[in-house]
Amino acid sequence: MLNREESADLNLSEGDRLQVDLSHTEGTVNVTVGLEGKEPIYRGNRQQNADFILEIDELGSYHISVSGHQAKGYVSFARIPGEQE
Image (cartoon, rainbow, N blue to C red):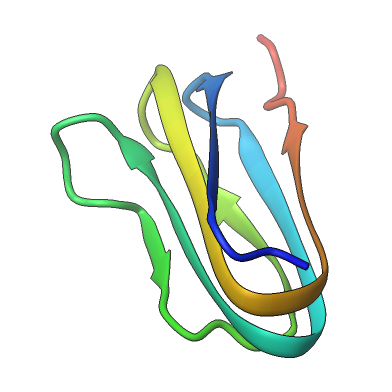
């Protein structure tokens, strides 16, 4: 049961993609992904079950935050490397 905020930083490069997979059966979940000091590239309040990809346009350390209230389920974030030239 998630009744707190969990966060992590992930170094991403321009051209990378971030796979987000969220599935929960109870409670509420909020998700935020973004660079420190900038508007988030994604914000999902009271997020429902979802599976999507975020395109990364800027190199940096992205802060990923997941907060839950009486939440049961899982959430995962996976880096998909961009093509190198």
